[in-house]
View (cartoon, rainbow, N blue to C red):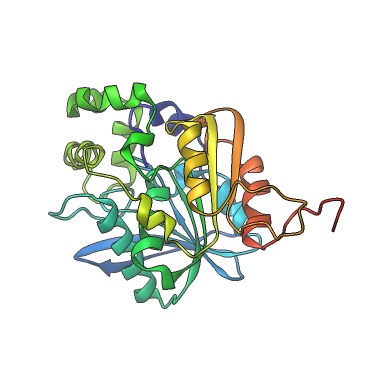
Length: 287
C-alpha cells in the first residue's frame, strides 16, 4: 500500500518500463470504470499491481524483466494512470474486486500476482476474497494490520491533507496520463481516506492456503517485526535441514532499503521473485 509522501522522490527517479516489444494496451469496463491494462511477454499469466499515486510506467524495469518468462498483465487502479475514476471510495476490497473483475473480463481464470505497496495490499485482499483466482502471490512492502506500520508513519497519517500533495512532483505528472487531468485532488482525498480504513486481517491471513513471497526493505514503512509476523502466520519461520520440507511461503529482506527504494532495485527484486514463481528452492547440504 501506498505511503504517500514517501513515493514522491521515487516517482521522479523511476524511468519508464523498457522492453524489446511494445506492450499491448487495452481498456475494459470494470465496475463502472474504464480500466487500463497492458500485456507483455508470453508464458503463464502474471498480474502486476502498482502502488498508490503510481501507474504502469512508474513500476520501472521490473515489468519487462518479468515479461521475459511470463505473460504480464499490468493494471492501473481506479483513478490512476489511464483508468477513469468513479464515485466510489478506494478501499482494498474494492481494488481487489476490480482486479478479479478485470481478470474475468479478459479471460484469466487464475494467475500469479505481484503487487507493490498499495498493490501488494490489494493482492493480499484478492487472495483472501477470491483465493481461487490466485496461484502464487508476491507482496512487496505490505502490511496486514494497521499496527504493523512504523510509529512515525502512524503519527503522520492524521496530518495528511490534500494541499501537501498538490506540491509534490507526481501531482504534475498525474496530468500526463490521467483520463481526467483535473482529477488529482479527488484522488488524493480518496487515498488519504484509505489510510484511515480499518485493517486487521490476521485471522484471514492465517487461513490463506497459497504460497506468498513477502518482500520488505529493512527500512520500509512496515516494521520488520510485522513482516516476520506475516511470515509466521503463513507457516514460515521453521528450522530447515531437519528432514521436513520448507513451507511454500517465503520472506525476503532487502538491505539498506526504504519503502520507495524497493521498486527501484529491479535486479534484486527479480532475483527474489522469479525462483519463487517457478517453485524453485535452494538446496542445502542434506538434499
